[in-house]
Amino acid sequence: MMSDFLSADEIRASFSAAMSAMYRNEVPAYGTLMDLVAQVNDDTLARQPALRERLDATDSLDRISEERHGAVRLGTAAELAMMRRVFAVMGMYPVGYYDLSTAGVPVHSTAFRPVGAAALAHNPFRVFTSLLRLDLIADEELREAAGRILAARRIFTTGAVALTEKAERDGGLARADAERFVTEVLETFRWHREANVDAAMYHRLHEAHRLIADVVSFKGPHINHLTPRTLDIDQVQALMPEHGIAPKAVVEGPPTRKCPILLRQTSFKALEESVLFPGGDGTHRTGSHTARFGEIEQRGVALTPKGRGLYDQLLDEVRKLVRPAADGSNARAYEAALARVFEAFPDDWAAIRSAGLGYFSYSLTEKGKAAALSGPCEVETLIAQGLIRFDPIVYEDFLPVSAAGIFQSNLGDGAQQEFVASPNQKRFEADLGASVLNEFEHYAGIEQASLQACLDMLTRRSAAE
Ligand code: OOG
Ligand code: NI
Image 1 (cartoon, protein in one colour):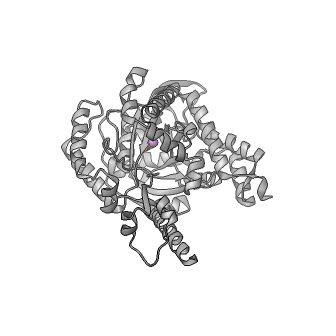
Image 2 (image 1 turned 30 degrees about the horizontal axis):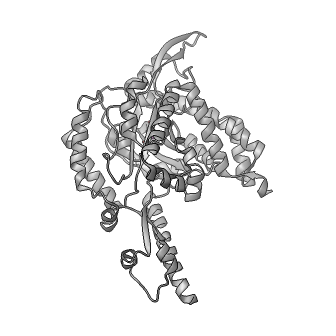
Image 3 (image 1 turned 60 degrees about the vertical axis):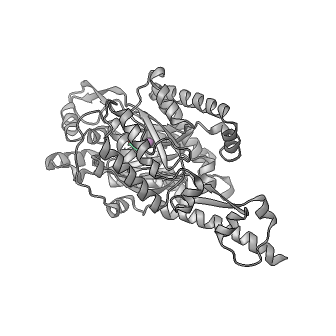
């Protein structure tokens, strides 16, 4: 019976809460970060009553500091395809394709996320999901060994698979099954201190790329970070050291602005954790591995292809001037260059809109609600007359250069490795077993629908007169 099912939104919310509890428990520094974020968010709201009022109306203030995303790295096409089915039960669908090979990370990725406004508002949790690209490993023998190791592991419990199949068959899960589903699926993301490979293999994989070792050496794709939302990322970045956590050198993404665009994010550096390598004779060798960290994010307006083109071009310019060093030695110079170069990106909403750089959601003003159109009218005129207002649509996706920066800062400060750029969305989608949603088309659709709704309301009212 349909009505007995827990909604996908509720299952996702419960999964996100369970993941948060597990991760805080596994990585205590993450709990410290969460506390810091909550404190800075409270301070920011106290200092900015207008912001508090706006968020209260739109963003459920009591959940403002909850997780917005996490990330995992998978090893095989079969793992990715099953992950897609598992996330679908929670109302999370693949949006966007990110090629990280250009940035020296041998993976390509998508983000599983809720798609509609209502689903995002209920619980925005997303998982940035990467698939290892063994085809980018040069050493053929190692590539085959890694492939064999990955093919032999099972990252989903039989319960998780069975409940996913049940949800697909019945069109949902009733409460007790949904609760079991969350518990079973959580197992996939758990940390395993005991490696899947011996120390020698770990070191060979590590030599090829630290990320390859992280994906191949373990029983499952441990969640590698969770990310709450901050209302003041610069403040949290500045306060991290006082709280005993080491931030990465610079905040990724655009500079601090009056009108935030896209996504700014930063993280604390991954912890060195002790792991056990099986010796083959029942004994274990102790070693260490760095993989898990904590991140924060602050989001701004979604940009159109034109706006994104400008963003990419400016960021490229900045990085030609100063490439942020992992040790933070040129962080100030990088920030200064970022701020200076981005002066070329308009910093007021009307200018961003009229230049066609961002996506906006349109609605009728009080005056607009009382008005009726006598004939066809230009949108620009309706805005100028104060009948229609526009508000920025929040960017809900990710940025490849930023993602690479987050990856890199958590893979250690060693030399960056070069790969030939080789985006392969077709291959990724074949492995996924579905195509990914194009994020630009998605935002354009939201914008268009909001505008059409305004025009319909205005003309319907005049037709009724
Ligand atoms: C994922 C890094 C990407 C983000 O926020 O851009 C990411 C990873 O390190 O696995 O999560
Ligand atoms: Ni992240």
